[in-house]
Amino acid sequence: MGPLLEGLYKLQIEEDKLRGMNKRLERAQRAVVLQQDKLKELEEKHAETQEEIKKLKREADSLNLEIKSREETVEKYKTALNTARNNKEYAAILTELNTNKVDNSKLENKILEIYSLIEQKENECSEIEKQIEDQKKTINEVKEKASDKINECEASLEETRKNWEKAASEVDSETLEIFKRLADTYDGDAVAFIERADPKKNLFHCGGCFMALTNEVYNRLLSKDEIIRCPSCSRIIILNPEEEY
Image 1 (tube, helix red, strand yellow):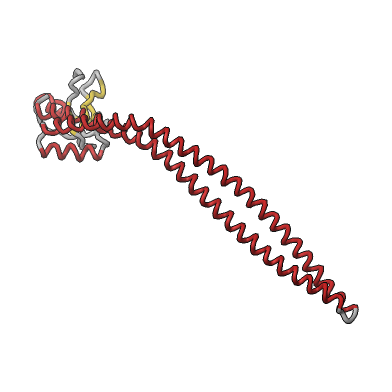
Image 2 (image 1 turned 90 degrees about the vertical axis):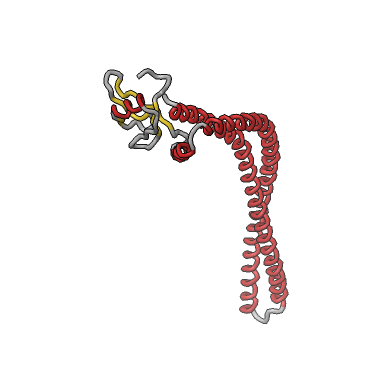
């Protein structure tokens, strides 16, 4: 393997390390974010429940006012009974009186149901508040555990990035741009080894996409130090220095 392909081989190794370290850092940071998201959900649920309680209380207040108004009407009907001029008028007033009493009774039952629901929602709020406090403690614990890992990853990432830049400096700018584009396309896998598809035959394929490669590609890799790309996936093809072909 000549200096060009050797440089790409080394750069691919550093690219793998760099992306792996970035993923480790993301996982460590994500652990905290996931717990913060849970806290946000609890806080939103708490706010929604409080809003439901306010709405129920407004409804209960409105019904209480309606009952008060109906009670005043009932008192008027009671007074009117004493001044009824005949049986027909008395019966009509009594019917209205009883109707209002029944309606009031229904409203009172509805208010009791609302108060029961308010109590239930308030208990839910209290439980959510406990969960919020517990979740805040969990976040602090996760942050403490993740902090060391994040610091360790960041320190390692800095060193890995320097090694990547050193390897990149040994590759010409045009080749480096090709490498970067392929790395972005294939999650870091810009370079692929040529692999023997059949140990008994001279059949080869790309180690990235596993599509067939010709013997000519293999022979060029043996004799020349140049960029050869897979015709199927466009990855840069090189010999595996740890394999015997």
